[in-house]
Each structure stands twice: as structure tokens, then as C-alpha cells.
Length: 449
Ligand code: SAH
Ligand code: SF4
Ligand code: F3S
Image 1 (tube, rainbow, N blue to C red):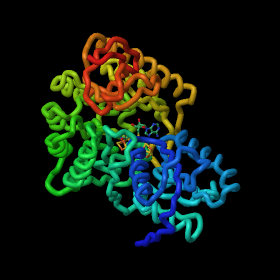
Image 2 (image 1 turned 90 degrees about the vertical axis):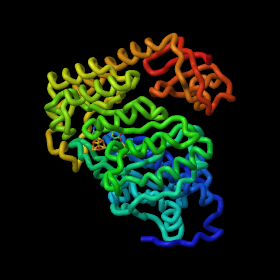
Image 3 (image 1 turned 180 degrees about the vertical axis):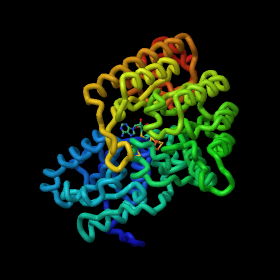
Image 4 (image 1 turned 135 degrees about the vertical axis):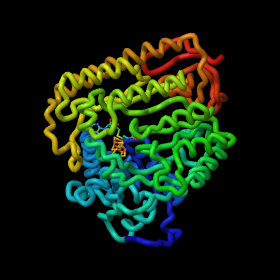
């Protein structure tokens, strides 16, 4: 293990890094934090592999498809590495944690494997490769991530993500995350407040708190701290306009937290709270710790207290043993709840998880058909719900130019709708009112009022 290294001026020479991230928002944020650290060491970020001295992938293991993608990207670098052997290729994140040394066997041209808790040591790991050669591995499971964030580096100036709890103790039977991200560790409120304060001082208006299972925030900290306490404290900070938090777990989402949400004006009235299935049998096999009835009651309670709250979900189709009847119950739940939007995934067995011991008996064709059915159903619901907003004025935080039309701006409502509207750059970073006149299932279109 490399301990303290004194960087010399030569080490700080001009270097370029290409970085690509796969997976969830927390992985994206870890990439952002890593890039911030590298920038502080003098690295320049480039957006093609051709001109890069260092090529890094922050990887995801949640489904087989996510891993296949990374291995194919890595395979494609073989030729480049032959031409320019001095280039450093690194695999970071969840797949690095999971596959460890075996990545070097499968892809000998990879120089670095760096797990989910070691990215704060990237600068010294890269230096180690430069000075001592390839095949460096850092996947220490006990290492605690502690990064002094470079607040000047972030993709969107007015909006930032902040990790408040790392890891997951839930062990849903299908999920690899607890194995690759480790046990839950919450950051203290003062630590989080300091980071949020620095972001706000540098111009940030909206903060999204991140956790794989954010409702258990505070577990293990002194003094019975809860997510509600953190939200209340952040709500009092001057300069911050909006606070969001993801991802909620139905079994850990307390009614107390819903009440806290309802009274804090800066907390956005939006919940991403994956149901995963509408069948109690499947939910039980998934080890989710709740029934569909419990989920319905929880959402009803939230809607009673916060009438305009928007609710988003994830679903897995084709879990082992899922029958037509089970699937029909998922369809029913989707029809009844009327989510704002949903992410739908085909079950993918992950070696090492409990569910991987069950036979993956739903055919791929059936998984695809069920996936399509839910996507179509949700698309119809989203469109119908969005149509209700035509003629209404919504508050949007203008984030920047729209990708599809650079003459227009894009941003989000407090309920997390994406809005595209006519407006000039002077509005970027401001909260503006937009009159909605047209919608699709995914986007609202309007004009400034
Ligand atoms: N609680 C986490 C969930 C991470 S995984 C969070 O913070 O987002 C995101 C979603 O991937 C899960 O909600 C689940 O719907 C899906 N998923 C997880 N494991 C899966 C698997 N083995 N196959 C298919 N989908 C899976
Ligand atoms: Fe995975 Fe379940 Fe933890 Fe989410 S709560 S990360 S689905 S084990
Ligand atoms: Fe993937 Fe790791 Fe996130 S497995 S979903 S990148 S926690």
C-alpha cells in the first residue's frame, strides 16, 4: 500500500485525463470528485481517448449489460495501448470492486483497478504506476471515503449532488450494490453542511442529497440523527433554493419524514421511491420488507399531506418465478399509483446475490415483452399527467441551453419535470416562471411569464 507521497514538480507536469462514467448518480458524483482531485494535481480533462495520457472508466455492476459495455470499451483500447504503451488505463468503481484482480487476467492492458472506496487516492495510485509499473490494485474494503471536495469542478454550476450516506445494508436479494459499495456509513451533519455551504457560496442553488438508501441516513451517528434533521438544518441555510434527496426505500421511509418534507419549503416535493414489483410474493422473494398494500398506503399518506407531490419508481420485470398473475399485479400498481415516471429493468442475475441461487426461469423474450408493456403503460400515464399542466405556470431553475435547441433553455420544476422554454442566457441559474403550452410524456414546453 502506498502511503504519503511527496509530489515533485516533475510529477505535476501537464497531464491529460479522459474519464467516462457508467451507472447511477452516486457513481457520477464519485467521478466528479475524482476529476476534481486530479485537476488539483494539474491534470487537464480531455473529451477523447486519443489525446489522453490517462484513460479511466468509473464502472457499474448492477446488471450484466452494464459490465459488458465496460469490457467492450476496454477491449477497444487494446490497439491504442499497443501504439502508446505509456497511456495508463484504469478501471474504477463497482465493477473494479467486484472483479478485482480478474480484470488484469481478462484485460492485461489495464494498468489500474481502483474500488469504490479508494478513488480519493487516485493521484498517488497513478503516480505509483508511472514510477513502478502496471497492474496496481486498490480495493480495500475498510477504507473510509473522505474527500475534500473541489467545489469549482462540477458539470452544472447551479446544481450539485452531495453524498450523505455511502453503502447499503438492505441486501435486496437481486442486488449487487451492498457487495460492491459496502456497509452504510453516514457523514456527519457539520461535514455535509460545510460542503453544501461551500457549494452555495460558489453559486449553487439546488442540492440533491445522495444515498443508495437515503432514508437510513444517520444510522450509526451519535444522537439519533435522521434524514429529517439533516433536511431541517439545510433548509435554514441562506442562499440555497432547493433541496432534493434520492433514493428512498419504502420500508425505511418514515411518515415522520413525510411530515418533515411537507413543512420545509426548500425541500422539493418529489419522491423517487422504487416499488420494484406489485406482487407480494415477488416482493417477499426480493427481500424488500414491504407489501404492495403497504406501498399504496405510504403513497396515499404522502399525497394526503402533500397534494402536489410527484412520485417516481423503479420496477424489475422477470424476477425468478414471476408469473403472469404477479406481473399483472405490477401493472395494476402502476395504473393505480400513476407515477410521474418509472425506470423499468429486466432482471439480470448477479453472482453472489441470494436471487442468483434461484433459477432465472423467465425467458428473455418474456422479460422483453413485460418491459415493453410497462414502458408503454407508463408513457401513457406520464403524457396524461403532463397534459394537466398545460395552461399552468410552473417554477423552473434554468440550468442552461437545451440540448435539442440551443436557442432555448432547459431546467426542472420542483416536482422534477423537465421543462424547455424560450429564453436567453441571462436567465441561466435563476428561478423563473414558465407558462406551459405543450407537453410530451417526458418534457414540458413553455414560455417565460
Ligand atoms: N437504491 C438504489 C438502487 C440502485 S440500483 C439507488 O440508490 O438507486 C437501481 C435500480 O436497478 C434498482 O432500483 C432496481 O430496480 C434495479 N436493479 C438492481 N439490481 C438489479 C438486477 N439484478 N437486475 C435488474 N435490475 C436491477
Ligand atoms: Fe440495492 Fe436494495 Fe440497497 Fe437499493 S436498497 S441499493 S435495491 S440492496
Ligand atoms: Fe451501478 Fe454501483 Fe451505482 S453497481 S447502480 S454504479 S452503486
